[in-house]
Image 1 (cartoon, rainbow, N blue to C red):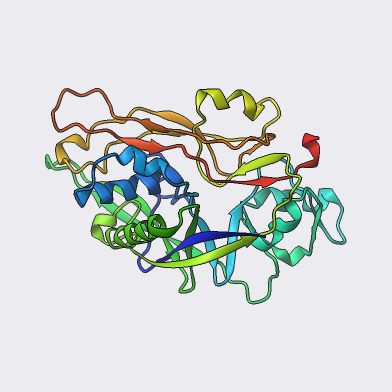
Image 2 (spheres, rainbow, N blue to C red):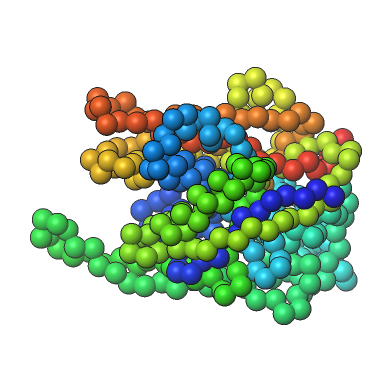
Length: 328
């Protein structure tokens, strides 16, 4: 059994996580690993520790943030067809319900990681969640859409729009996993606490996305005869790693990462558009026994200004070994 350190984010105000578009009427459920590591590095730099930020970000792996509810921790569904059956039903009767699943309770990974078929009862399927048991289950969050008005600074016509807030229940929130230990883990915890005071997501400047931090553990029983790895973070492979990923057999998603330099300490630079890069998404599965290392990239745009600074994004992968029978 493997023990992993996790950092829980218990939200005390609603949060809106942008989905990479200008539409605010939908809040994404994905708080990606590269966003979190960049935010932690920015806070570190604000404390005068801007030396070797690239080295700091490369010194640990951090997963993307996933939901938790009470003692239930959820992990992303692996890409590809899952070995899941519903008791008393034929496959065509539950196929659509299985496709809705985005998150699986961590206790069920003991079976899935071994490449074995997981049999569940119908009540364990709760929309986007696959539960260990449905007793006393409560959705970790609810969404509420508000109407707002955007008023141009030049006095033009007001433009109404909708804004989606996500509210987490009292005993629910998001958590991420890290391989950091010792003093490095303590530093990350402190940076997360400060991030919780600042907030994450859109509209943190008006009180959105504030959270409290709690340290905990995640226990997983993983197979010794693993033949694949599953990402729990975003991942940018180094050039020499690509061949070993066997992409022709892999099941993966690609996410285009970019956007404005909104986190810059210099307000005059926040209108600049960062360079974009594709990254493998959490839940991607690669048939490899090699240990990927990933890399840090600098997405700073070319701009002739002495205040311009690097914009690092972490592609260091956090992954778990699994066994998939269709990769034999």
